[in-house]
Image (cartoon, rainbow, N blue to C red; front, side, top):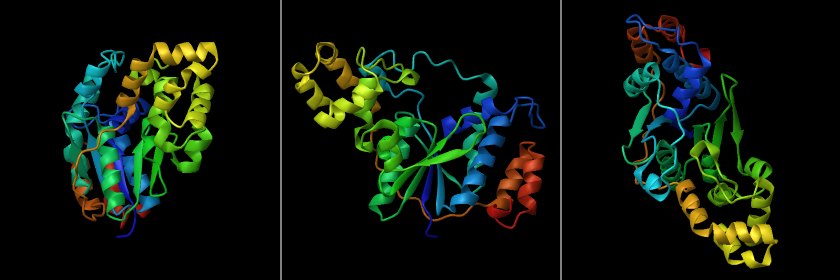
Length: 289
């Protein structure tokens, strides 16, 4: 198979599906299965469209301990996982694996770190990767060989983000995304950013200086407000950048493996996803779904 490796942000996909579809969608045992249904449908749609050589679904810690140590408020504002979604999280690895999609899990690192590591491994082996996520932090992985399939909110589909698109959206190269996040901030991760510096100023500083560290070093040559923001918050900004930077872990390159419709149908039926099972049974390939 010559298609790209598809690396999937499982927590985001499950969250997205849970809140996009009604939790009145229940299995035979009465548990909500809306997140599992929405996630499977999304991945089957992407598989039909992109013909990946393999699909890897990644799970990780909600907040890596080293990131919390750097900045205790990191992820602190996120609400707890609803009980109905937690049950589906517990079922998800075995459910996805039934389709022939492998899983990567880490109790120490976050799913983002695994996604980036898989992309690095794939490129080193001469392949291409597509990262399925709704987290813009992953734009730092984008290159000629790695693109992000950015999942829109609700059930609105996805859009492919390449190097040119990162530059259009942020005004910087992908490798500077952690520096950009440090300056601009990221409310979803409770990162405040540099006081008074918005996205335009952040991008302009990075284009001129080339990095956060260089911008801090040249702070005395900036406007007084920017000088104060960079010098008074320098250590905090460095911590934000380290938090936003993905940590790589050594992972094996997954072998080529197509989607197993028959086994997927069996797993779907076991969870009470009977309509999905019927669709899978009647299809000859993912393109028929």
